[in-house]
Length: 152
Image (cartoon, rainbow, N blue to C red; front, side, top):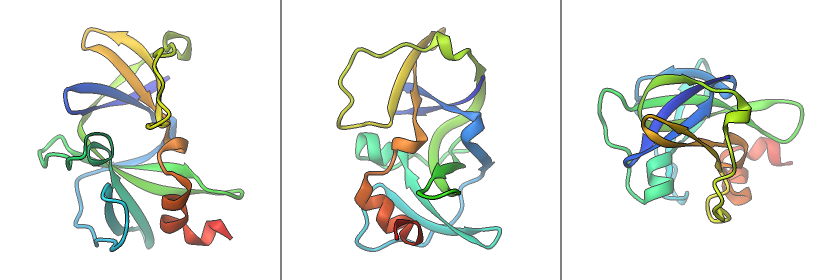
């Protein structure tokens, strides 16, 4: 399996590339009033409105640093029904990939109930790398706000 690596603060994380639609440079976003602080905004990609969340803001309470290696990664978010929708993720230092077998990841041993998107971990020369589970990124109320047509 291939994973896109990125950082939140000083820690390393991995995103299964099968969930990734495209990796883009940062784009200008339209803000979404009355949304969670980690909802960075929305933009149009190939005629489709795509909501974007900032994983650094979600996890650490501070926005991602704007640097050359900060990217907007569009992932296939599993919406209710037969189709997935695109969800943008602002990710810092997202310019490397890693190959690992699923069996090389293990439970972190911690309670992640406040951050259900945090998955199992694997060892690497960089230290522990934790996987991020796309399907668990949005709590129900935010999912309903960002994907209202799918919540009917």
